[in-house]
Image (tube, rainbow, N blue to C red; front, side, top):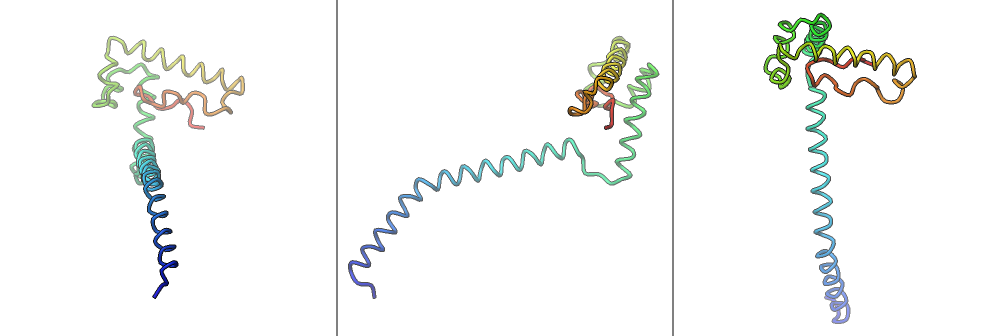
Length: 142
C-alpha cells in the first residue's frame, strides 16, 4: 500500500493530467475532426474527378469523349446533343447558340497551339482549364 505522501503525489499528478486533458482533449478532437473531414472531402473529389471504373468502361468514356470532340469539330449539333443528353451543358447550349460554342472550342485550340509554341504547356497543362465541363473533352491529353 502507498504511503500518504506518495498517495497525495499520485492524486496530485492525476489531477494535473485531468486538467491538461480538459484543455488538450478538445484540441485533439478538433484536429481529428479536421483530419477526417479533409480525408472525406479529398476522397469525394477524387471519386468525382477520377471515377473508379474498369478498363472497358474507361475505353467507353474515351470513345464518347472523342465522339463529342468530333461532333463539335464537325459542327454537328444533333450528334453532340445526343452525346451530352442529361448533362448540365445540354441545358445551356442549344441549336441556336451551338455555332458560338463551336467557335469557343476553335479558339481554345488556337490558344493551346500558341501556348505550346511559347512553351507554356510545360507549366501545368495549359488548355485543360475547361476540362470538358462544357460538353467537350480537354484539348490536350498531355
